[in-house]
Image (tube, rainbow, N blue to C red; front, top):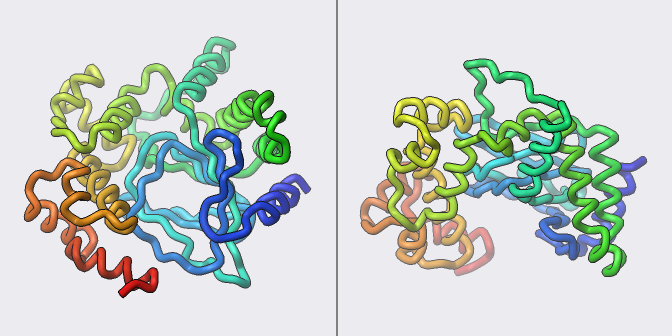
Length: 297
């Protein structure tokens, strides 16, 4: 019943495809009534909950499909390909995007630890994959519904918004993806901090040695732990983040040269080579394809 109520709220508020503001910090509703093939994207720390239809993401070759039985939890910025290949007017996609505030999540994770809810040691070969699909449970559904009902009152949003968002975060940390998320947001997760620094400074030179130094690790240890968490080497991750961000900028109308500079490329030829190697098209061909897909000329 709770999930049905959430769906009714989304259907009532989402009058067009794309994101719809809720007035609640970090929370957006979305709808898709046409198929969108998987394209380069960057998932910021977030949870995406689907109530009808299905969405998919591809990270380092692994495909994640999630619908109204499982929500997606991504506690760190990740370069992915994402789309809604099965959406149509007859089978529309409806869902909620919830940005995860790293400070609040870290505070909650620490409070849980201090209260005696300790995280079990991770196996030495744990590969977190960067994304986790989690089963909906009653606590998550109830907290999400309580948050979305604030959408109807500006006063309620102002007074209760932060508290109910915190309640939803807690439900996530207690749920199926809880240990995965707590490891990412825990005070000791140097890899998450390194990723946060990289995503905030894509336009600047990025040294793997500097990343390792920030994490307080040797280069070899940092490389191994980074790959355990993201499935990618630090160099692969930085390249994917830069190229995915550039592709998104180009799709949004930024020129190829501006997009390359914005993500830290000083050599246009190197950018073009790496872009084509990643996506099978030159940046110009990619730009033209995006115009055609939107009905441009």
